[in-house]
Amino acid sequence: MTIQRGAHARGDDEQPPHGHRAVGERRRLVALWGVVAVLAAGGVWVVATSHQQSTASGAPGADKSASPVAAAGQPAQPLTESQSFLAERYFPAQRAYEYDNYRARRSAAREGAECRAVQNDKTRDVLAELGCQGWMGIALTRSDQPVVSSVTVLRFSDAAVAARALPTVREKAADFEFTYPDGLLAPAGTARPMTATKVELVGHHITLTVSRYLDQRTGGAPDELLTTSNRAAAAVAGQPFMWM
Image (cartoon, rainbow, N blue to C red; front, side):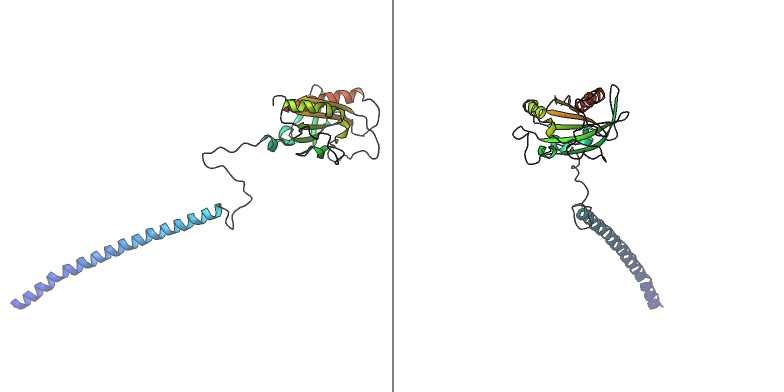
């Protein structure tokens, strides 16, 4: 009886250690799986972040057409004057152009860096050695009269250089192309449309404004309507450059 009690007592005494070990093992397994889960989650995050960085840096699948952006906290680089010398910037298509009784809309626009490109004879440059750095051309069509004005703006490095080129532009005004409204063709052959012309120095720019009737009617000296239209169009052409 005593032996049985001892054996029974040993059985009872040995059960708690087995129970404690089982509980401890379960806790260790839970902790281990928790670490694995955290590492797995971290691995997914790292992989996703690496993929995003690869895509953003121009790897296959990246949008190569996206414009470069300034770094965080850094201002965007300003455009140079030559980069911003665009007809749409100075003469937006949606703007109404008014001066006294003159009302017009922009009906064509173009620009370029080579000043020979806006001259009738492309084999020579009447502005050679005069420092022309770019040009833009627009057409202003009156809203209430059948008159169109071609405005050519020539850009120079400073006002002194532009002033030296002014006499040549005035003398050779007929050597520059007329900017026609979209859909209107130049007169054929040797036709000489009635024309009013004005050349002005505005800061470090020269504006050449030529006005004609939309039907390209010919004639000698310009009539009053062409003259007043030309004067108003020249005033509109100079306004964006007066304070530059």
